[in-house]
Length: 189
Length: 189
DNA sequence: TCAATTATGTCAGCTATGTTGACCAATCAT
DNA sequence: ATGATTGGTCAACATAGCTGACATAATTGA
Image 1 (cartoon, rainbow over the protein chains, first blue to last red):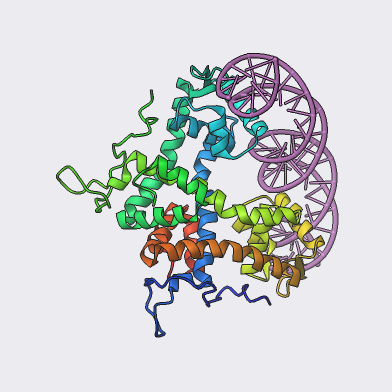
Image 2 (image 1 turned 90 degrees about the horizontal axis):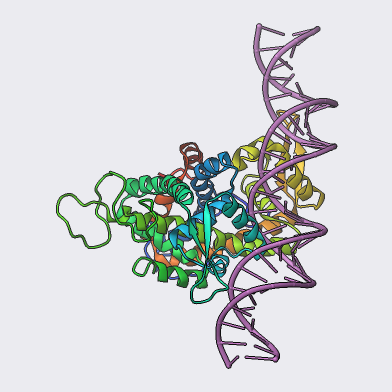
């Protein structure tokens, strides 16, 4: 057997700063970070997998009733958050290819969820915004997901939310964290 | 405009328990849960999207070099966590169709990452386990993701980890939360 | 014992969403 | 003017999900 596949693996594999954990502790010396046991890290991996799936599940269901998918949702969400954004902006956020976006975006424009206007400063740009129909859908979808977050946040309280945000933001790649820090100036990091 | 698409929406939409938030507060009465503002909930949505993508990104890269995808990773991960599990068990965890799993599983078996043995109690079952080769890959992939978690956890400390786990587990569907509570008895809820 | 159920696998075919690479038109900036 | 940027488009392909039908073997229950 490889050293990691017993479900109860228990030796911290990473040397790290010693910050007090939340569980009682057996050995001496500086605290070893009990939340860094293999088991704790695997719990994190699995929580991310299941939570992400459940978090998107309700919206996915609503979307599929409209013949849309998660990719459409992302476009609607981010255009709703920042109306007037360019196609380039959206590509940079989603990190998919122009072709992948084009397919989804054309669909949303044809179906009347999104409209384009020519950029004033740079006429090459097509600035994206939601139509009334698009806004209505965005509101329904975002409300669904916000309700789930609101329930989780209020069940766990502000201190837990703070930890949640801190850890998630530390899971990000550096570049993305910098971007998000701009969006939420005094919320990330 | 619909009521929710201004990026600075700021009225809590959910009546909830009043637990002190982390930010200073302006009005009187019981604390209104500042972490329930629309902005805070959207920050959560976006963090989940970006963090999930970054969290899987490195492993995805390693997998694609081997001609494998994220679906293969999930199978390898869960079989590694619980060797001897049946195909049914795996289907229940992944919540995909038999056909989707079959395609991926056959590939992994042909490529020598996973082996099947007939169930002793129930001879219909094919019990799944990793081969040496599968164990080696699982270890590499899990280490990659664990390293990311270990870095985030140790950067933020045990209290943040606790909040992270609490909030994520509250984002789960009830049924999944119950399952995970069994896996991690004194860690979830 | 025999029928129903279960566990698993397989086939054909569809959809959504990602990829590459090439190419074009309009516009902008130097 | 010319080269870079923004955006769109086409063809072609891969992955990973889906449905529905059907087969086989083993188990379970009346």
